[in-house]
Image (tube, rainbow, N blue to C red; front, side, top):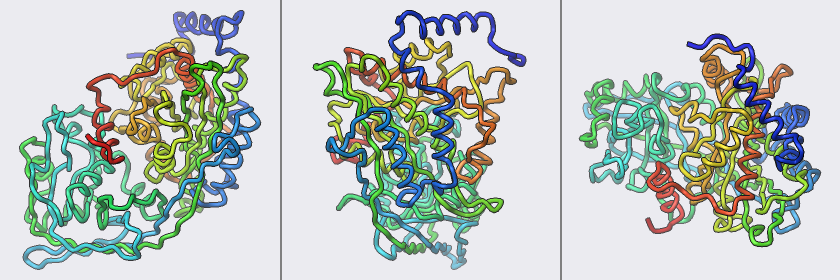
Length: 558
């Protein structure tokens, strides 16, 4: 058991000193001039502005989003980047469709008993359809986790025809319930509710109801309620693509009531779903759902600045740095505050992106490959901005060697470790190891594997398109703090600030950890931009499932 850290250990001090000599000494570290631009003053200025009330939470299609995009473009220009959109603009228009849903959901048992769920306390629902009213009336079928994972020898559907039905399913994946077929507490791609909805639509279902379990859920019901009851913007579905009439989340209390209407026990249902022998259960319960949409169409913007490469043979290739600048805008007041500023999520990552752009532009010799700095919109709406980019890349994906994403800059102080999510899936790991070592940090695995963050930010859009990608996140081993303090702070953030007005700028934020994070991201990007070999995927990795679904989504052959 480690005690309180009051500073660096002697060994750590030697590592730090050696790292410092590398950075400042005699030109031996080519990153030196760039690293000097990643300063607490610059980071604080960007963060303070992007998370200010003036920007009203930066929701796509709002005045605050326009102000944020203009600010980012101006900073790119001041750093000396060139416009990446047609060589004349920093703004890539992203066509979005926003829906403000209201919904009704009711259940009818075989014996006639009925349950009308209350919107908000019991359920939230939405529809990807753009018609004014979308509805369904069909039998409810329980499909366990709603997962088909052939490489894990797992199939919840077992070839059963569920077309025309409403599917009731669990969140997460069986590994978190004890199955050895998955990855234990480490969430896989199959545990994402977006995957489950895609799979259900592919099988011809008319609706999906996900059950929220208070003991295993990654976020509380209040977060789901507040995020899903607001206007949500996203990309319009491609013509002819499979879609559901509605999707919904059901609170655990409401789910228990619905399950009892089918003469089933909720705990027993959870137990049988953990078995690979599970087969879909036709409950006999009838579901009636209606979603009414107020629809508006508009364009928001990805903001893109390019630093051209210096090597005639490699300059046509690009490393893409990303961070999303959108958040939730103005919503339900909490303690009289209705502005969801999103300081950590993700004004902090955008602030680091601006520091990185300035850092690379200050290098005395530009990297061999070009570097694209891309601030994307509508991440909070299904990764829409980055998804649009990979479908409409400014530089062809065939010439995009890697993506480095930042979503959440450390605001709680310096750490002894750092994590690069997704690095284990490709040869980018070598660059990550070197970058962490150069900064005197331990490279750790995912600090919160049960959350599945590697699948929940913009790097996923690039992964699905086949581009090796990582997300640089901060460590949790804080200098001068008791063991477990970092995990506690992250959990408190999720419980009290995530998707709430409390995620806002404060004068006492400690940005030293974010600076560490930015320096590691800079070193990774520099290594990728100067390396003679392009990063490659590791064969047989967890990302095979992601890439397969990416090909399916784009219409390519599996």
